Length: 219
Image (cartoon, rainbow, N blue to C red; front, side):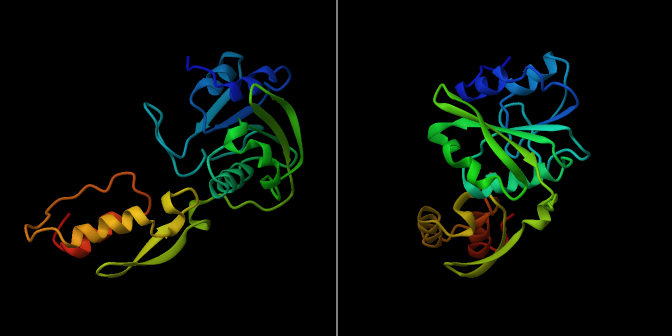
């Protein structure tokens, strides 16, 4: 079983009467999902980012859930995206639990839970973390990645290029200084062509586009 984080302990301590129905577990390292399953709950997990043996998926599992619990993600755009996705899988009045560390932004997380969740309350605050609970409101929630996709155009060294940005991606749809510096360095590289390049887990794929501009035959 995965090692419990101090913030997930708050949620596990509050489980007493919340084990019925179908759970959606979001952003978990395996601790919470396993604890719920051990207590007899039906559990499905959703992680946007792969880690170890945990696979990633762009959207939560389809269908309806009775409850959801979420580890607070980094950044408000990623949090809003996850909240709306979760809300699209919950019926009116269903609870979502959000836990996180104080230094990870959970102290102000309640401000971002509307409009999809209302009556947000703090259930616990200790161990340098907090546990919040909100109830699904009547606000409409989009449940597809395409609804959040944003087309952006960036000016690269050899001309403009178009990309698709999503909440939580590196650089938030902009060209950061480090990437710009690396792209500039690529242009001054010797004449020996690059034939194959791997742009792995790099947000929108800006580096890959820069390589393609410099060496059009690269794959």
